[in-house]
Length: 239
Image (tube, rainbow, N blue to C red; front, side, top):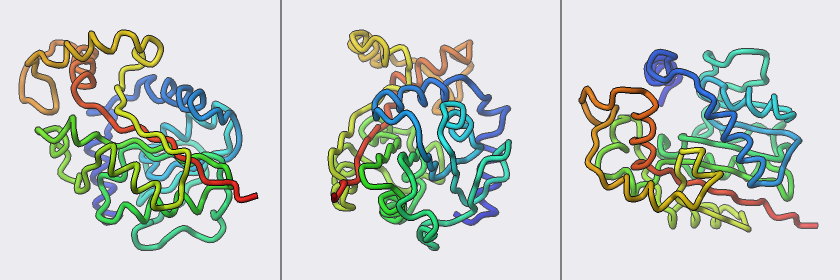
């Protein structure tokens, strides 16, 4: 994707009208800190988009940096780098610098996603952690994955785990992940959500339907059906 096309993509797909800002990034940021047990340090967002997670991790006390093909939608004075990792590779000044490298909804857009994973590995300090999230092909192949025409590389739990292992990561954990924060607090409710998922309820953007009647209900239906892959992988400490 070119820089010009990336700007158009962000302007349309992540406009405040189509994707209004919510408190979800704040909740996910806290969940990531909890799961990684990394509560401070240097944070890099690969594919930072409009900068929501830069805001979140800055508020959590991290020194944040964002990479993307374009950073025109990032607000505030965060450090950002305009770069195409598939072409340019990781700049030398960012090698071995970060405690957490985060990427959400990015590697499915890349023809050569191993370039991003390799850059994440190089950017981490020894014992640093990469957190990646991408649509789970098992739960999106029937339509939602291709609602976004820029999705080109589907991922499964096995393929993501193997890609991380081939890059050199260890202590790898990959899971199917509900983007429903109440399930992070109350995982015992997952069986009920799995039953709800089987109901043939329409929702946007996968269906052109007047239902559901509320934004909240639409999110609940969508994210009970469209699971993500959530991975945590650690760069070995050679010392």
